[in-house]
Length: 320
Ligand code: G3I
Image (tube, rainbow, N blue to C red; front, side, top):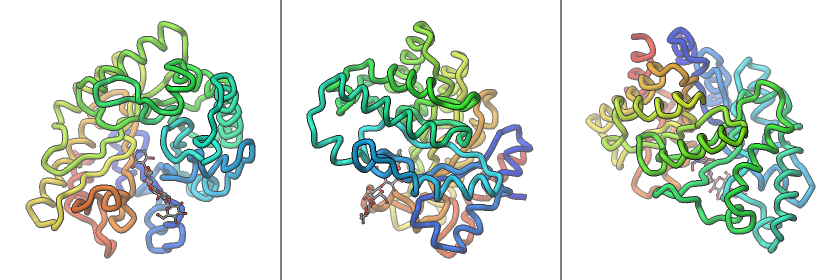
């Protein structure tokens, strides 16, 4: 039985993975990635981001997103669509021009309208806004905040709600919001303010990019998830990985296994946590070494396609 089979038996909707476009060329990788017993859900790691979808103003290219989404549909895997509004991976035409507030709002609506309509009925969820917060809970000073102001968040969710297919969930997605802290409390405030104003938000994505040995505990994660589910939004672990300081050894692998298991168990034990997505499952395709020098081995499968202790610890907590 694969991880998705076990997750579904445990009451979750899915166990999934991110897939990046270059990985589509690796047939051994793809035989695992498309196996719905193992992964019942897929997230494009890059293919649906602004710079690829709208490389020139009002010119749309869905080829990279479709290359990930279409096989997932064929293989009966759910899709988490990622993402509509972010500060990163924006095209040069957007970052290199000083648009006025009203121009940028219409650019935002146009982008969301096109992309959301293209993927109409194809997404279990959309990450509508990604990583809008600083660690202290203030809003990140990016293009959106500086030109539009804090209302860009509400506008993004309103535009998404206007064009999305019925049933597709609208998520706020961020990292370092997996414990109760200033940043996660800011997400709580955001949800409360949306609800008060009647703006739709359906879920919070807990990215969960962890480091072996300093990952949040099971109790911390459960308490954190509860502050969201008590507001009547669902949660999901959307980008789980647990990096280690290289070189790896058996002790670190055991720590990693326990950190993975705590996260998956927290989701399993939380009503309203719908599923777990790993931010890739295969070390050679992990984003970690490119960003954190000296760290890596963050995924469930080794480069030789064997499974790590972390794979077995995840399977075990799902089976318990
Ligand atoms: O497309 C160019 C290609 O033309 C060029 O030859 C190549 C050379 O480096 O770079 C390619 O762009 C890379 C892009 O991924 C596509 O592969 C960028 O350099 C690289 O920085 C980019 O990294 C992605 C990262 O987001 C960008 O911030 C990672 O693959 C992707 O896994 C990562 O995903 C994010 C989530 O979206 C949000 N949460 C954090 C997570 C991890 O950083």
